[in-house]
Image (cartoon, rainbow, N blue to C red; front, side, top):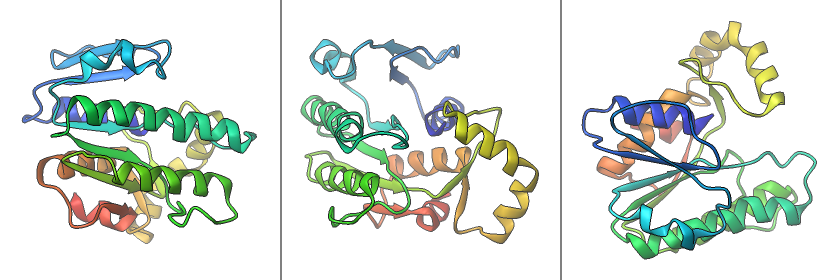
Length: 210
C-alpha cells in the first residue's frame, strides 16, 4: 500500500526523471517515467543487480504482516530479504539514499517481547550501518489510503473500509499520529532531496517533512 503511494508521488513529481519499480509482479501502471522489473526470486540479487545502478534513492516498501508467522519465517521475509537487497544496493550505488518503511513501535534494543518489533529493530540497526550516502527509517503509525490505493492484506482492507467514513475526523483529531499514503510518499521524496535531521523518523517527524 505504501509502495503504491510513493510510486504515485514519484510519477507526478516534476524533478523525478525515472522510476524503476522492482517486485514480484508488475504494477499494471503505464507512465513514460516508469520502468518495471518483475523478479520471481528477489533473494537472487545477482540476477538483477545490474538494473539497480544509477539511481539517487531507493524507497523500500516491501513487507509482510507478522500475523500467524513464526519468528524464523518472519525474519527471512523481513530481515534476510531486505538486507540482501540493501547490501546489493550499497555495493552498486553508495551515493544512494535508502529509505526503509518500518513501523511505529519498532524495538531498536532488539530485546523486547514483541517479535515483529525485535526483528525490525535489528533490521533498522543494520541498515543504518550500511555505506549509503544516507539512510532513513520511517516509522509511520496509521496510514490512510488515498487515490484508490488498496492494501493487499485482507484484514487491512476491512479495517480501512471501516475507517474510511471517519478518516478526515481522525486526521484532524490525531494529526501527529495519522498519515496518508500521499504524505508518506512526499516524505520519502523530501528526504531524498534534502535529507532530514533524524535518521529514524516517527509519524510526527514525517508529517513535518510535508
